[in-house]
Image (cartoon, rainbow, N blue to C red; front, side, top):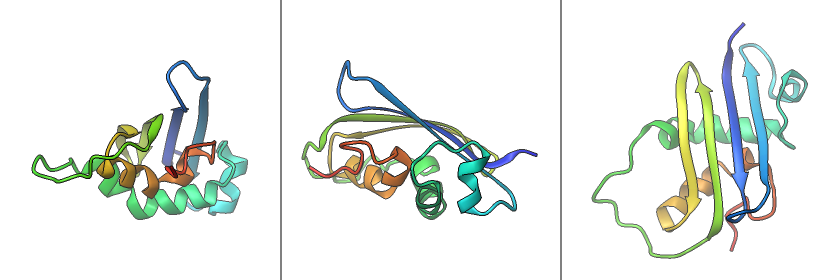
Length: 123
C-alpha cells in the first residue's frame, strides 16, 4: 500500500551543525496516532500531519509570487529540506528563516521539523 504522506525532513540548525532527520509516513486509513508505529520518526506525528494537511498544498506546490512583499528580517540559520510525496505528488521543498515570508512558511509546518531547538521559527 502506498503512503498518502511520506515525507523525509533533513534539518540543520547552523552551517556545519549535525543534521537531524525525521520522517512522516501516513497510509490511507491509518489514524495519525498510529502513524508513529508505521515508520514516522517525529516526536509528534499527529501534530505534523495536521500541519501538513492544513498547509501542505499551499506550502509545497504554490510558487511564491514574484511581487510578494516580505519583511526583511532574519530568523536564524536553520535550513530544512523536505522530500517525498504528499497525496501522490512529489515534494522537494527547502525551508529557511531568511525573511518574513520564509519564516511564515517555516512556522506553518513547524511540527514537521521535529521540535528541535530553533525548529519552531521562534527568535
